[in-house]
Length: 318
Image (cartoon, rainbow, N blue to C red; front, side):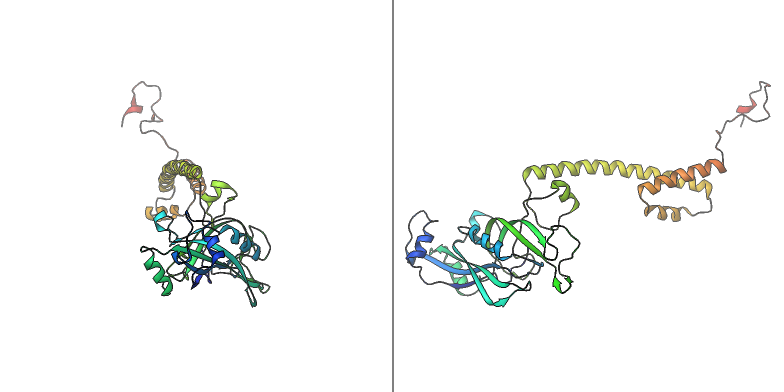
C-alpha cells in the first residue's frame, strides 16, 4: 500500500443532470431519476511522488481513467459485497499548469464522480459525506512494471528517497492493468492506507517470493500451493540440517577435549554457535586428525606387547 496525498472527496454534487443520469443508468438495473441518486466528486490519485517514493506518470493516470469507470467504492479496502457503498460513473484528468510535482512535471490529478441510491440505509453515509467525516479515499489497482526514475531500469542499485545529482530517486509505476476499487479510509496519511499495487508479472515466480519481494503482491492458488510445498520441503531439509549440525558440534567438542583438555567446554560451545556448516565440518575433521596424531586410539583389550606366543591369554587380562 502507499499513501495518495490528494485522495479525497471534493464535494457532494447537486442533483445530476440528464447527461450524468445517462452515465449513471449504465450501471443500474432500472432508470433512476435525479432525485433518487446522491452524487459526489473525488480525487483518486495524481502524478506526485508519494510517501513510498513512487508515482504514476501522466500516461498511467490516463490508463487508470479508463480502468476506474464503473468500479465500486467500499470501506477500508475490505472486499466484501456487503461493504459496497457507491459506484464510480465518471472519471477525468485534471491538469494543474500552475503546480509542479517533485519530478518536475505539471501536476495531473485523476478525478471521479460516484453515485449511490438515496435510500434509508444510505442516509448515514450521505450525512457523513456532507459532514466531512467520510472525506479521505484511496484506490486499489495493479500495474505491470515499476522502473527507477534515475536509470529507467526495473532492478538497479538506486535507493528510493535518495538524491542523485540533485534528482530524487523514486519508482515510476507503468502500464496499469486493472483497477479494483476506491475506498473510504480513516487516516490516509498512514502508509497502510493508500494506493495498493499488484505487480502481475512476477519475474522469477515463486523463487522471487521466497527470496523476498518489496512490493505487495497477489498470488494465484497454484502459486500458493507451490509455496506451501516448497516450505514443507525446506522445513524437512532444515530438520536434517539441524541434526547434522548437532553431530558436527558433538564431534568438534569430543576431539577438541582430547587435543586441548585445558579449554573450558562452555568457551568452545560458544565459539561453535557462530560457525557455518562448512566451517564446522572442516573444524571437526581438523580436530579429528590432530587427536589421532597426538593420541593414537586403541581398544581397551589390546594385546600387551610382552605377551608373546606363550598362550597365556595375558593380552586379555585387565
